Length: 108
Image 1 (cartoon, helix red, strand yellow):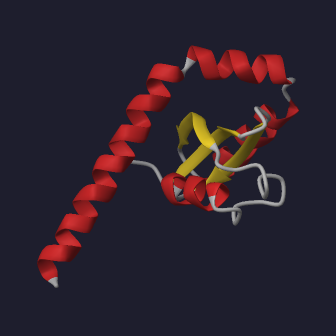
Image 2: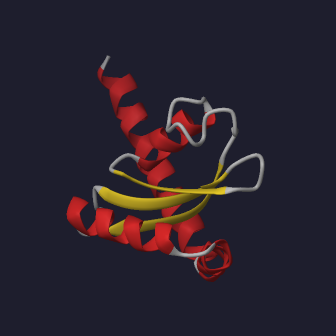
């Protein structure tokens, strides 16, 4: 699994925010709690609508910039075209997170 992800969240006002992270689930929670970015403060809770895994941070930042340049309609098309992949990747990350928590609990 990679440590570089580009994501798009939909804010409660239906606007989209694009970002890069190495910890997507934690980052989405931070956005929803008003800690993620200036733009998403006061626009939470947010919903993860797009997630893409990339090779490294450099690739992630380049892809983030590409998506940020897209108009909203193109972003929504991207989201729609990759909804299944996003859901699958999000579930994989949740499973990994759950396994880590279980291991930590057992070791304590």
